[in-house]
Image (cartoon, rainbow, N blue to C red; front, top):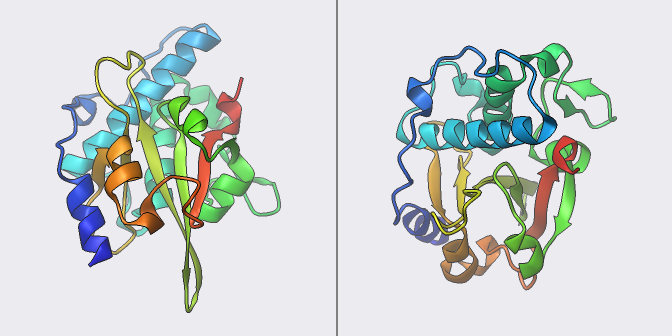
Length: 210
């Protein structure tokens, strides 16, 4: 029932329209760009790729990779391929030992490739597109880590911050909802607030920390 409540909450508001599925796979930056410009373009592409999956999966996103961490890996890799393909000459992620890797599960992503921003309201206000909301849910079989990708317009008056995520189950669809609603209306174990022991915090890709 709690999972159903979270599903209904996050699907209550339709995501903003995006054109990601219609964009060509080729890089959109044919010439070198300034770091600030590249960062802005990468965040925009991450948002477009992630939100496009809410409507329909990209064929390039392999079914075996479709879970919460897989959405982040796919959105980032596709964004880099479009904006800064040269970065993909080496893997984006780090494995559990800290070595370069093309694959990282949810726990390894936030422990090796992302840096913590905090758990409080101040950290939530500073979130940008591409940041991650992380949870650790305890189960009889062991802990399960779950990640949600943040999508937030640079002009915050334009639209509220959203989360986009895959629930992890085979055949499930990607979902989205307003971050503030998640923090105030979801079951406690899914609220990104300090009172929730399952909430690990907000995280940012280490290469985007500057």
